[in-house]
Image 1 (tube, rainbow, N blue to C red):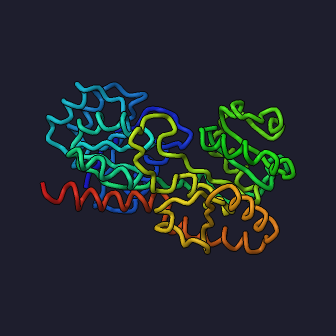
Image 2 (cartoon, rainbow, N blue to C red):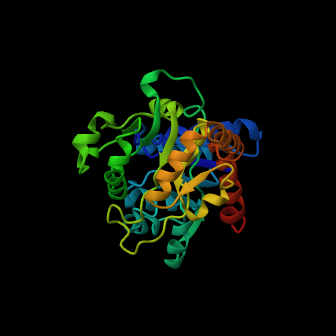
Length: 330
């Protein structure tokens, strides 16, 4: 199969463009002649370059991570009679934005399994593929004291997270903790927690240091309609990429329970989830006191992640899906 990938052209906190491109290139090297890859870098190449690459590379599939392609560009790409797909992240949180975009393509790939039936109910061919981890960015390492904590959370201050940390404030005052991300000034108790908050975004290399320095990393998944782009509250089932990032650092995490988490890790052995604030506090106290058990769980999650949840593994699955579900019937 010959795949032409259109990059997003934007620098995301998840480093999606470099993660996707490096994984595809590694698969190309390992596959011999079974898989060939080319990339159009939408942030630094002229649009005519895209059309030239199609003519010379002759792809079997075109896959775009760029959600900002113009209707004229999409229409021209369709004229090549090559399956054209859109890779969507941030489902289902942006589903009302994604649906009109998805209708312009022959198929979509969504990171969340709960969104697949939504697209299919609108007559859009949809495949599910979760995000993964790039171990080049997230791996075990020794870190200095400035990165060390009992409890760490990295992420933006979305509504459910604000509520949780406002409720946790009396409890956290007795702990060594750090919160990293944007918008945390919205906390009701920001003045109290401020000394423990780094109120800005940080790159993956820095995030990995905080994960490595924490005894417990919190993984607080988003709620479905937190930015008012999912008014039907389509459920979010698939664990976020942070799940894999944390595990790849051999760090112990407490994650909010998502339906599909059990499909990726053995709950209780490789991953611990919590339900509600009291359960969270009890599990924090327990695992802070049981270091050996905490480390054993983190070790098992680390091994599972490197075996099953890297981008190289994930995109081999993607190639199989494209061959079997997109190209097989052409």
